[in-house]
Image 1 (tube, helix red, strand yellow):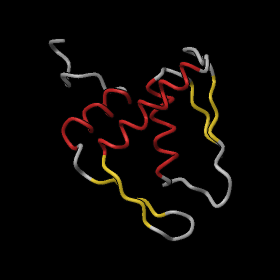
Image 2: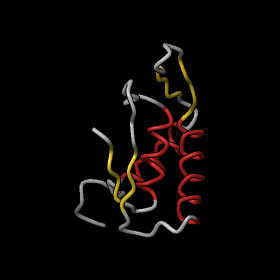
Image 3: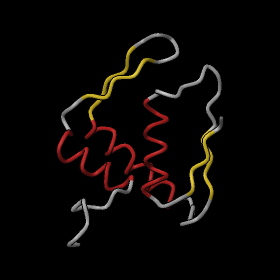
Length: 100
């Protein structure tokens, strides 16, 4: 749209698509609770999030439904699976609740 600052929507699914498109080969690095390092690319993360989003739809989770992610201790805030789960939920326009 003309007159807007950005030429694309600033929604999380759009941000994920742009990360996959422009930075797909770049790595996401996270430290797991056992102190090991997990590496994967934005392209891998986007693919996994899309697959999980499809699975959520097939399970009958509809737009506006609430989906919770439980994060047991030790807190995996930087954990790669948590990131995939969050983007999958956001892609399907569901409401995401994260255990504090």
